[in-house]
Image 1 (cartoon, rainbow, N blue to C red):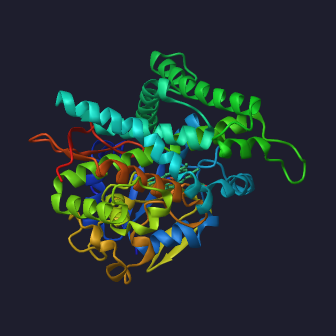
Image 2 (cartoon, rainbow, N blue to C red):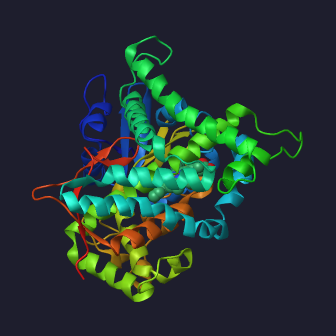
Image 3 (tube, rainbow, N blue to C red):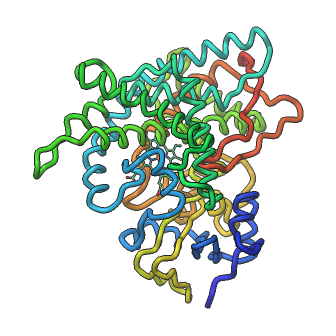
Length: 451
Ligand code: HEM
């Protein structure tokens, strides 16, 4: 049996045109019209999109050794991140993952909690200020600065505040450009001396120079507080050769954590404010939990397990707006998925958290915002891979605990003080670039919480 082709194919660009202009709607139509597997064709590539949780598990876990990251999406990311943890492969990746893993252990992340709360204070002050002039705040931008500050300080020992706006803009521009390179395969290569390419290399240089400074500072002053992750990378030695990582590799690894470690969490937090504004009952339940557990004291990392409703709110936002909304692999060895579906060698395979998280066989009222669906009782019969915002298998996100602890502490700190409202008529829509951002930012009214 052959899977049905994703609807909306046009000559030359095949499915790429629809995936470029309306990716989320096209994927949703794919599930409706093709069922659990859709065939896709892009110029020079054939592939399948897998929507069923069992197929997601097959690709990411059971057949993780039969696939690679040699895909147009990861090739574009390599232009920014080089050969870091997200983009590298094979034994090299495994060695780097083993070096990085201890820095992401739960106990280490919890130890960063107090600092994460401290780093949220400048945002609370800015929001406090904004209540005076009664204008709107771009909450997407605000969350981007905050998560950039947190990852820079805790992982790299870097004070980014002066450059946050500049670096944030460079990253936004780079992500749009990388996305363009994925969806417009006929763009001239970066090496051609064109104004567009020049802007790209300049923006990349902005990011890289900040990272190079972090490395230089940590080398010069390894015992300065913060930046344990970077210190570990600098001190790591190869088991056989005894050699340290070379400068380029260090730069790639740090760029990866810098980019992957803030952009995704910022989007999660931004969408959380948007959903809470539209669901006052959920917002009140969240604030009730914060009042009951914390009283008047500041939140700490130890509160993380004591805030189940807050965590369910974040889980539900990650279901509806998974920042990594589409994940690609190249099939290196033919995979038999069962029920007659074969993924041939040298084809592409995709999974789409955005769609599987709404699959009607596994989710009631898929578009509804209902954090309680993550209660133990209601989750127990759901297949594991009906929900995979952090991916799965050996390439699962290394920063999942970091992201969830950070988002919980930030949300707890700010939601106790502020109510955010959407201006009348505002309807934020997701813009699927590399991650799922609110299109045009997220302009909201910040008010002191009414008690
Ligand atoms: C809500 C926040 C986040 C989401 C939704 C997210 C999502 C993901 C996903 C889906 C993957 C797997 C990609 C694939 O299979 O191809 C991944 C990988 C990765 N993430 Fe995250 N991430 C988040 C936060 C973070 C943070 C905070 C960090 C670091 C501080 C981080 C660092 C990484 C790295 C290094 C990888 C590559 C891991 C490997 O292949 O060994 N992420 N992330």
